[in-house]
Image (tube, rainbow, N blue to C red):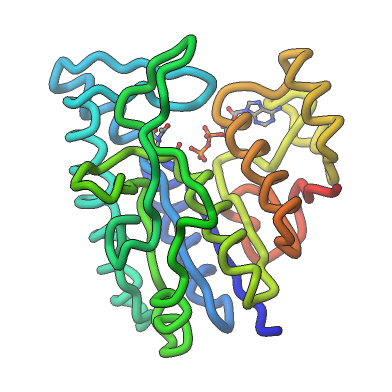
Length: 258
Ligand SMILES: Nc1ncnc2c1ncn2[C@@H]1O[C@H](COP(=O)(O)OP(=O)(O)O)[C@@H](O)[C@H]1O
Ligand SMILES: CC(=O)N[C@@H](CCC(=O)OP(=O)(O)O)C(=O)O
C-alpha cells in the first residue's frame, strides 16, 4: 500500500508569519502523496469581532449562526485557502484548494440541536464521502488543500472543525493508503501542564485522554483534536501524531496509541 501524509495546520500557526513559512517549507519537503488541511479559527474570531458579530465557542467548536457562517466561508475557503495555495505554488508544489463541497468530497449533515444548538455546523459520515477524485488528484501528483467548510448536498454550506475534516479524510483514504495523520499547532503536543514542554506525553491512549479531560488538564481546542485523532486510529489510520509545527519533520510529538 502507498503511504499518504495528511497534515493539519491550525489557526495560531497561520497567524505567525515565520512559523508559517517554516511549516510550508517543511511540508514541501514531504515526499509522496500528501494533503494539507487548514483551520483558521483565530482569524475568523478576529474578523467577527471587528464586524461586531458575537463569537461563541463550546468545547473548541464554534457556534455558527448565519453571520458567523459567512465569516467562516470568507476566511477559510477564501483568504486562507487561496493564500496557502498560492504560497505552495510559489514553491513548486502543485496545490489545489478545495472545500468539502468541491467534487462533493465531504457532504455533511447540519448538527441537530441538543443541549446546545451549534447552528450551521456540519457533521460528517465517512460512508457518505467521495474519495475517487481525491485519489485521482493524488495519482497526478496534485496536493489537495482542504479548508474547514462542508455542504449539506442541498445547497447549504456548513462549518466543520478542521480537525474533523482531517480525521475524516484519513479514515476515508485509509482504505487505499497507509495514512499518517499529523496535527500541527503552536505547542509541543499534549502536556500535563501546557506551559511546560517537559511535561509532554510522548504517547497518549484513549483512557488517559478521558481521564485528563475529566481532570481539566486537556481542554479547549485539544478536545476535538484528540477526539478526532482517536477516531482516526479506530478507523485504521496507521499513525496519528500531535506536535508543534516546527517539528513537522522530526520526532518531538505526542503519538496516539490504542
Ligand atoms: N493538555 C494540553 N496540552 C497542550 N495544549 C492544550 C492542552 N489543553 C488545552 N490545550 C490547548 O490546545 C491548543 C491547541 O488546540 P487548538 O487551539 O485547537 O489548536 P489549533 O487551532 O492550532 O489546531 C493549545 O494551544 C493549548 O492552548
Ligand atoms: C465548527 C468549528 O468549530 N469550526 C472551526 C473551523 C476552523 C478551525 O477548525 O480552525 P482551527 O483549526 O484553527 O481551530 C471554527 O470555525 O473555529
